[in-house]
Image (cartoon, rainbow, N blue to C red; front, top):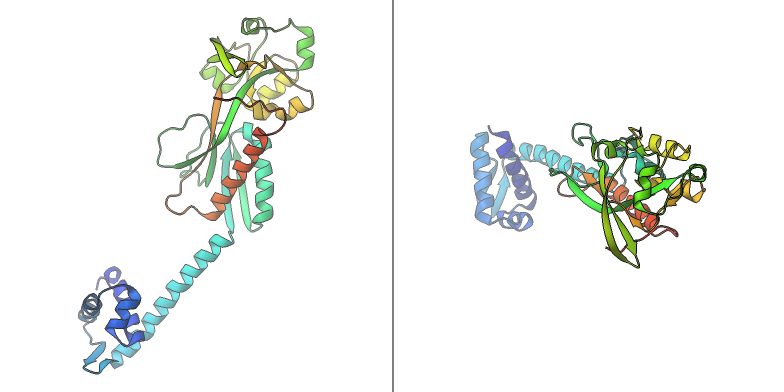
Amino acid sequence: MNKLRNLPRFLIFHEVAKQGSFTQAAQQLGLTKSAISQHVTQLEQSLEVQLLNRTTRGLKLTEAGERFFQHCAKINNQIDSAHEEIQELDLSPRGTLTITAPHSLEQEIVLPTLAEYCLEFPNIKPQIITDDEPLDLIRNNIDIALHIGQLKDSSYRARRLGQLEDIICASPNYLEKHPEIHSISDLTNHNWIATAWQQMRPQYNLSKYTSGFTSQTEVFSVPQDIKANTLPAALGMIEQGLGIGMLPDICCAEAMNNKRLVRILPDIKCTLWPIHAIHPYHGKVPSKVKRFIDLAQKNIDRFQSAPGHLVRIE
């Protein structure tokens, strides 16, 4: 017996027996009366037993039909319970949620988002993987990846959350001891802290930004005086006065607010980096995933609308 093929027939038979009528069962299930009758006949042939006595007065279960109806009722109840449990799980998420994000988003976006999220969903056990290298979501059992930069083609689904902008910065202590910087050409006269991605791709376009318009663009090659393989290391070395650097605005915000860093050439437009939330789910996205992404969106919007954040019109 083909159990997979017969399973829908079990449920059809259950509805027929419950309604006592092919017509009423057809109305409940959204099928034709002839289709309902055919499925029940095929089920009887497969089981090699008669389940229903068909008379001009209606339908009556045989002894085998009575027993089989009880089994089908249990199957139907299990399916209903599974459906209700899954719906309840989506309304009140529990279990694990694994998120990966680069270092630049950790302090300003990921941790504040997680704090709000855990208050809303106390039954979720989160795991954070902070890594500047993109990780495979399926292989690493990751629910959400916050990604900076252009996306590669993949089967994952993505939602754009905003963008970051690189800024050139240094510590006040460094600037006091070194020549003043008035133009892009002056930048090459200073020690540079090169991030991992700047070591792989050293050339960037720097544009003069005046009264809302870009007046000129220069190709700038980031010097490789001091190299750092993580963003926190690069940020720390710049704060310690070892040199200047070009870092995403979001990771410099706290240091600039506390005067540990100063922005250099604020009228220069550096690289813009899109931020995406990526997940592997197709069809209906689990509420635990969607809610984290919504909160991350809110915190990115909050950062970009904060006083002092430079907003550029593209």
